[in-house]
Image 1 (tube, helix red, strand yellow):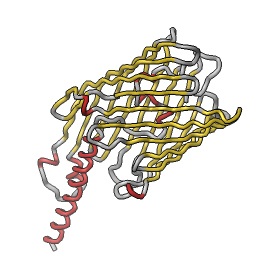
Image 2 (cartoon, rainbow, N blue to C red):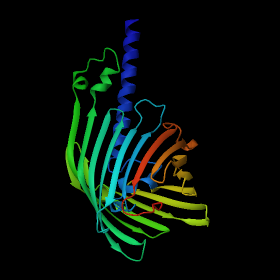
Image 3 (cartoon, rainbow, N blue to C red):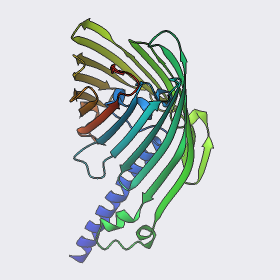
Image 4 (cartoon, one colour):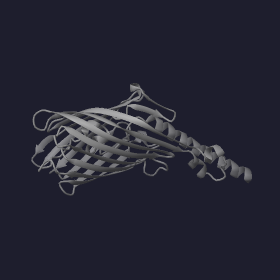
Length: 313
């Protein structure tokens, strides 16, 4: 009986250690990519620092994402973005704070951002952006031993690895009344627990495009595309289509390549306050380690630059 119990404990411990290894590998593979959000069009600052000030007013957004909702140790991400123009309407300032946790690994990023606009005709500009901040990473391997009874491994019970590092990112953003295009590298430093270096071959590159078709006075269609490229990984993309009804109700669907089919609904409670919800449903080819994901958004646009607030998307 003791032998059986000991065997059971060892098998369980091995399983948990393997799960931690998978999580660590996943964490390293996505370490130079920003966490993904389905409602990214409503809070683009976390992708591109050149977006700072693009809403022509102070915009504050909160995002909460629970990925693989019924899997223990699955990713949980919270994000706060705030950005605004300054008085001359050429300079933008912003702040992005992202808290990300998967299994025993956690990350906290804080990046102030700045943008400079070159203005063309009304509603059209080209912006250049730069962000600089800190990344904090922590891996608490002691949690593995806490989940297994009688797992007396002194190496695990006391191991917690953490690091704080400097990071920078850059991007460009072009916007007209109907079209928006962005290209960015949100994180240019490749940070690991024992080193931090510039290596452009390991950076993640993002391209984002969005166009608005006016169907009639009450309805608009907004197709969009987000491309993500990281050397050594297949090119991934999010292709989405959003219906805009009277600038009040937004209904959208997104296809995330080889990953999920996502639905989104946003409602403007007032012209300034927006609530949003997104649901990600995994594709059959990705249902081994995945399950559904939930995402919530709250956004508030302070109107002190313009008397009329136009939809930033």
